[in-house]
Length: 254
Image 1: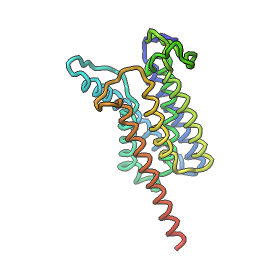
Image 2: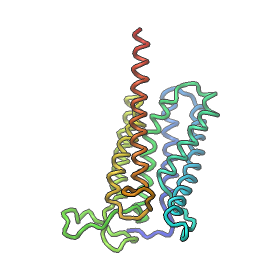
Image 3: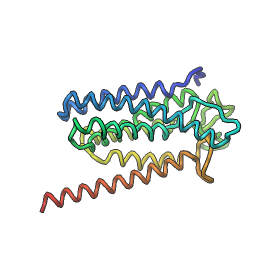
Image 4: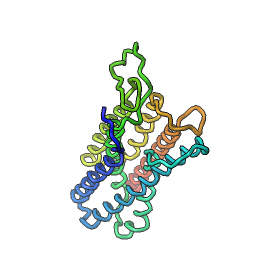
C-alpha cells in the first residue's frame, strides 16, 4: 500500500468537482437552459466546494475538541458530513440570493443532478482514503471466512476491513445509477434516493470501522448520528416530492 506524505483526499475531491462542472455544462446544454445559466451554476458549485472544504475541516476539529479539549490541536483532516452541510448550505444560499433572480426555472433539476454528483465526488474521494490508509475498518480475524478481504495499510499493524474501498464501490455504483436516472429518465427523486440509500449504508458500515473518530452520543458514532439525519431528511424530501406531484396531477385533472 502507498505511504504518501500528503493527503490525496482533497485533491481527488477537487478533481471530481471538475468532472461535475463538465457534467453540469453538458446537462444544461442538453436541456436548453443556456450557457449563461450553466456558468452561473458552475461558479456557484466551485464556491460551494470551497466552503465545503472549510466546513469539513472545521467539523473535524470540532469533533476533536469535544472529545478531548485538553489535548486538542488543530488538524487539516476533514469529515464528509461537515463538507456536505457547509457545501450544500452555501450552494443553496448562492442560488436563492443570486442565481434565482436570473434563473426563474425550478430548482428541482439541479437538486436531481446534485443527487448524483455528491456520491460521485464522495466515491472518488474514498479512493484517496484507500491510498492514504485512512477510514479503514476493524481487524479481520485470521480464522474468519472473510480473512481474504483484509488489507494491511501502512497505517495499521494487522489486516483490516477495507471499509474505504467498500464505500468507494458503493458510492460509485450508486452515482452511476443516479446519473442514469437524471440523464435518461429525468427523475426528480435522485437526491432523496441518495440520502436514503447512503444514510442506511453509512450507518451499517460504521460497525466495521476501526479508526476512532470520537463519540458525543453514547452507543453510536458521530457518522451514524449524521447518517440518521441524512436518512430522515431523505424520507421527508421524498414525501414532499410525492405530495407536490400529487397536487400537480390533481390541478391538471380538475
